[in-house]
Image 1 (cartoon, one colour):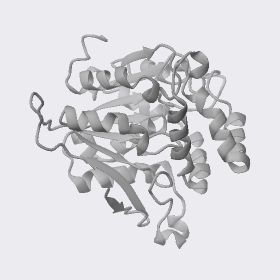
Image 2 (cartoon, rainbow, N blue to C red; image 1 turned 180 degrees about the vertical axis):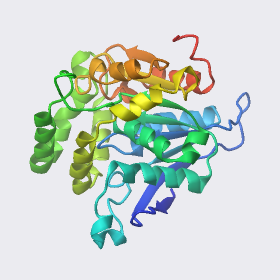
Image 3 (cartoon, rainbow, N blue to C red; image 1 turned 120 degrees about the vertical axis):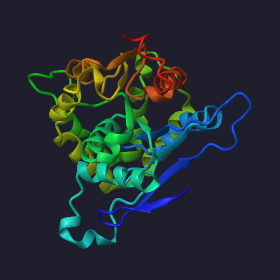
Length: 307
């Protein structure tokens, strides 16, 4: 799979680029590209059950980068010895995505983000005229927007103490902590079903992540309030870029009312679908339903159903 050097510090960034081959009988090749942005602390491997059918069966080009520090991407590059280039920010993540899409000249596309990938996609859109011209929609799965920290106005969001305890656990007992946390992430206590082998696969995905990348990305994640950005998205009105929110009704990490529910208030045109017995990792436990929702959205079939 290909790599690209970040324009920020030359970090080597890995990405998957699945381009449809000869269309199968009864299928067609689409001009729309689907851009998948993974959650923290995962990698593009979390999207495999979507990339293959969407590319092979439905003719979509699918691009899925590994965020710097995760999967097969470096956390920093050889220019990071420059102090100014050692301060990775949310903007750095977004600019890496912008650079990739512009270099590949993807044309019209839809962002599909999970958790942190939702904010990353929104920031890329805000910062890039190219993205604003060519982005035809957002699909946010288990989003952590607008702000993943508990406050008096958002009491059901995770507390800063919880985030700090997560980082402590990553430092002191990473393999055990990940193994114990994953069932809850996927909504097993609420009745979601996931196999032991699949959980083990996700343990390997998280094990790939750079330790420094995990910690600093967490700091970046919890310090950013996207409320103004989400509000600006809503100010576009009904003619603005389309937005589909897919969320688990049993997401204990980022409850609907603390995240997607607020986004819906700020962006009234957003379409919403709540998944039963689904946690934060619903992209794995409810893949068949989500795949259909993606297809409905990109084909323009979902508006009437969720109006």
